[in-house]
Image (tube, rainbow, N blue to C red; front, side):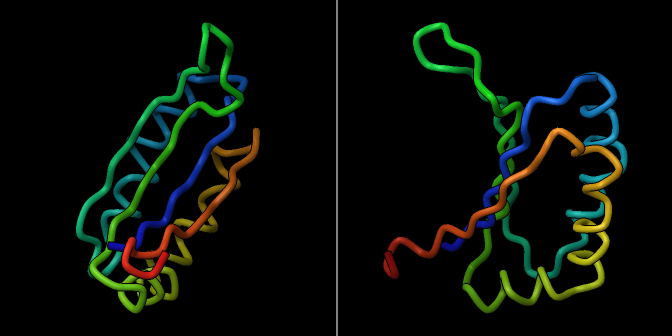
Length: 102
């Protein structure tokens, strides 16, 4: 199953970031068509080191076509636009293709 992986850099104000992510961004993402599952992970560094990333979000789809449809949807556009409202520390996005395609 292909995944959209989003890594959020550690924000200056973690509480404000998390409140916006929970209360505004998550409801937008939940409107993605054909979204199978979402997984969130707070990240820590290896060996006691700090991580430059605060949060990893994985959106899981049944097919690459479903993922493309979600990104092209109204919710996809709204979620991209919303990034500027809370992800000022930086964000990186990746697509992990289906394991069968890798």
